[in-house]
Every structure is written in structure tokens, then in C-alpha cells.
Figure 1 (cartoon, helix red, strand yellow):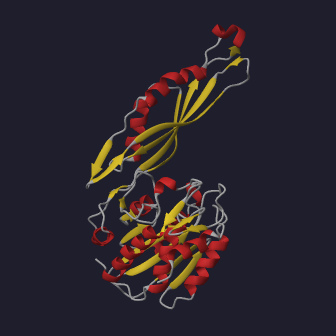
Figure 2 (cartoon, rainbow, N blue to C red):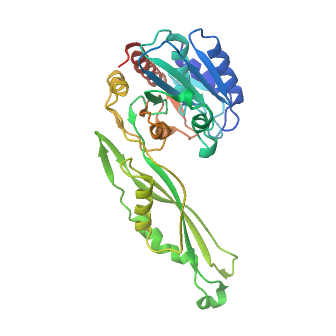
Figure 3 (cartoon, one colour):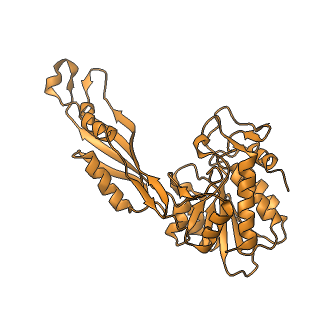
Length: 350
């Protein structure tokens, strides 16, 4: 078998910060077009390689090719059975596993669509899965999907929803020497921030998977000048909500926690996805992965598939706690465990 750690290092050495995935997409396309049992299609900087064996079911195996900006970790560095470098965890290790499966599993028990896509780490309008669902939805048609997001080789089922809200507090300007003539909008944030500080999110268990909600202030804007009482303050709040709530229900919940304010706007929101572990292919993957599934606390493109009627889970190498950090790395053990679990699924089916 190919050395998966070395293969991941090869991919890390190809820079692919979001919006700059052309080189790595060219590389993957060239590798896949040489595989006789795959039909390869490129749409923008997204590559889909599909088998067409007429099997009774089809599964999507997907991984994004972009990374966050470098943090002194641009180059791949192998130390024993550990690879360090930008994207080693999130998620060129997952891409390496999918590439190896695509090149070596010639007669899967299910038809497979291998999807390598761009712009997962940036604004949703650029997301490769989102663009494919609009421009070429037939390429993503499937009975189930697996996202090779970093999960430390565990099944992370479904995902939580995510929401950003902008809260506005108004005041009245005045000279700070006569502050009593004004009303300080920044001071008015105090009550809202106290509510957020004391917030305790729900811990929701669905099909044995726990989802832990959160509500955090992530940005504050305000102020006019060093001698002026500010008349406006804007607080951005991020909410992570369990997949048993709709986007509307989550928004109403946040509104209730925040209390009375002068402005409340949902800037963006994406609903979560339920575990879907009762699907035969995903149930088989749980068995092959040899581990207890858990809920995905972050939002992933699993939700995009779920919204289009395709149940999906997250399963990939790399510890998600080191993703996007200077210490990003992946172990050989994780790579080989994910590869083995997915290979058994493809060879045995449901």
C-alpha cells in the first residue's frame, strides 16, 4: 500500500490557501484521469471522479482541498509517524485517503463518487459543494455521503447548526466632559454581555450522539472619538445549535437570551444535520470504523448533503482540536485507520 503519510506530505507541499486551489486541483485531476474505472469531471476547481458499475447504491466520499492561511507551517515535516504542516490535519490527510482509495479500489460493492472541492474554509457563497449543487447536482447524487473532515478517526455524526447575529445598541453623542448630556451605547452592552457570560447551552442527545450548544460574543464595534460619548455599538454573536432545532427556532432562542435591544439581525445561518446513523451504508461504516460515534460540534458540509436528502457523516484522520493552529499535524495511525474503515465499507457495502 502507498505510504499515506508520505502522500499527505506531498499534498501539503502544494500550497492551496482558499481561492488558490488551482495547482492542487490540477495535480489531483491528473492522478485521477489515469484511473481506468473512473469517469472524471472538473467544474471550476472541483473534481468529481465516479465509478459507473451499476451497483444498487452510490456513496459520496468528499474532501476539501483548501487550507486556512499559513502560520509558519507552510512546509511538510515528517517526524517518525507524525506529519506536521499546513493542511496536514484539515484536511489534506483526508484528501490523501480518498485519492488512494480512488486509485486502488477497482471493484467496489457500491458505486462511489470521489469529490475534491474548493473553498470550504471561506464564505459559503464560494463553497465548492454549494456550487456543484447548483451547477452540476447530478455529480453529487447519492444514497449517502462521508466527509473526510478531521475527527481523529472516529465517526462524528451529523453536525450542529451555526448562526451569526448582529446586535445593535443605540445611544446619544455628547462631549465626554459633559457625559450626562449623552447616553453611552457601549455601556449599554454590559447587560447583554452579562447574559451571554452566564449562558449555559443545552446538551442534546440524538441517537446516542451528544450535541453541546454554545453562544458567544465574537466581535464588538463602537466608538466615535476619544472625547465623544458613543451613540452606537454593534455586538456580533455566534450561536452553535443542535440539529433538533430549525434555523428559525435557533434565532428565536438567541433573541430571548439577548433581551431587548435596538437592532437584531441574523447575518448568516446554516441549519445542522441529524446523525442519520440508521442508513445501512452509514451503519456499516460505524461497524467498520470500530468506534462509538459522537455528535459533530462544528458545522460541516454534511449539512449541505442532508438538506438535499443525502444522509452523511464526518470521518477523517487528524485531531480537530489542532486544525487551523500552528501545531497542525496528523499521525500515521489515524491515516491508516480511516483508510482501512473506508476501504472495508467500499469492498463490503451495506
